[in-house]
Image (cartoon, rainbow, N blue to C red; front, side, top):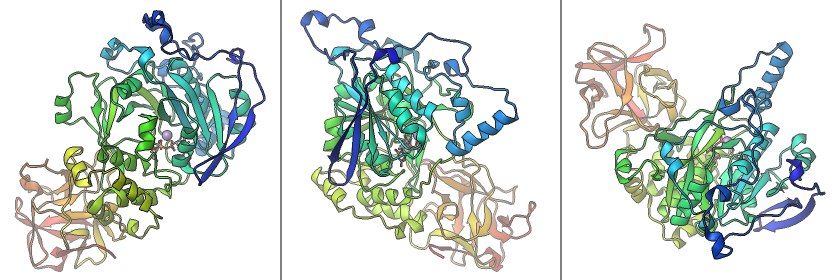
Length: 575
Ligand code: UD2
Ligand code: MN
């Protein structure tokens, strides 16, 4: 790699972006000639795909025996000392960096796309160019550099203008001089440093501000790109400049670095009413709209980290909300904005990029709440109340000034949230939240105990027992809604859950709620009567607060109806 460019001392240059944040760029000069000859002479128009597809750098020869090669899981036999090091790396990064360090920075990946994707042909000379912007904060060496190498080794030279790395004020030594030194040998890599911690939104914008490509492509700093990932994104944006296009995000295991993912239909993005991003299968209507498995899939939201957008369109749309700090919320804000203001958000099934989802968050994400509130305040109109009901604390959060963002919404003539729900995300369960019919579900006999449901797995909420737990007033797992159709809904999640009882089992569990327009299944139907009783018609029993249960945890249970206070219930919004 180093042979490809002369190492020069990086030059520091200060510059300003907007009024609020500052960074400095480190330019690496290099001797090798850059490919800039798009649309040269007519003779050159002879499409020689092989040549035009050439990446910025070729991968070194394949070593099949190298750990993790071809996306295989790494299995190491470690002694005590090595295990200790492994543990340490995990604690620090929430990713098994000990393993990552053993995996080649240039490894090849298994094919995960639909085989039909291989048939797609691109007119390379007419595709827009892109700058890949990667913000990082205290990232480990090997995950960061594998991302950089992977971009350089899978992106056609003719399409990639540059990789812009943005250091968001990291404080780890390996990201200072050693990184500059390492990168200075490379073509098309630029490093820029924030002069204070900006958070991912402003860090990305800092990178975007020096980007020279037609299209901005954002990636997280622990990614690996699949062969051919870039062309579909750029092709779609050429075809439709108001489309914001995401690759399919394949999972790279944080422990073994196995490259997971499958060539089947990718999932699309949604959200639940806590404003948490969710994954869903492609709905029937969208499947019908598409003509081929290689067509883009419309998605109500994006995960946030990986997407391409026409640069001019990005700024026209108001780039990002710079009032958002550190992490979280920006993905839903941008998703709502794209759709409501006339663009489209899509996933290209032929573009695959792997991402390491850490074991848990490696840094504090306490700012996420304020970011979500900003998104709700600007884009959700009265639907923001549904969010606040489920997160009473969010209402008290200091979220700063959003007047500029509201002006932007006005200026762009964006549609309202109702339109978004009806047209873009008709699958979402929209609660009614009638006064007195939502919040904590409390018992008159067993005071200060609330209905509580804690799904073992965020992705499959069904099947567990509903319990009684001391009321905490935070919404979330203690938030229930009695619907107009007589369901007791657990609709902080998407798809929403509904409480079920049957005539055999005493305890209440959770199922998915009926789909829109369908009748309520009998086992989900409860009559909330004037005397506070919750009558379950199928079993002809009433819900009672029980202290003594088979497993010792207090729980609501179906019992013969009586006038016991333990069968009287009421909703309370706040403690
Ligand atoms: C997901 C997104 C992420 C972002 C986030 C919501 C994917 C795969 N990832 O979380 O991109 O949209 O949801 O906000 O869709 N970073 C900084 N400064 C900070 C914090 C983070 O530069 O203060 C960088 C970080 O190093 C990384 C990127 O921003 O490159 C995203 O952060 P993350 O990887 O911790 O977020 P992730 O993947 O859990
Ligand atoms: Mn990430």
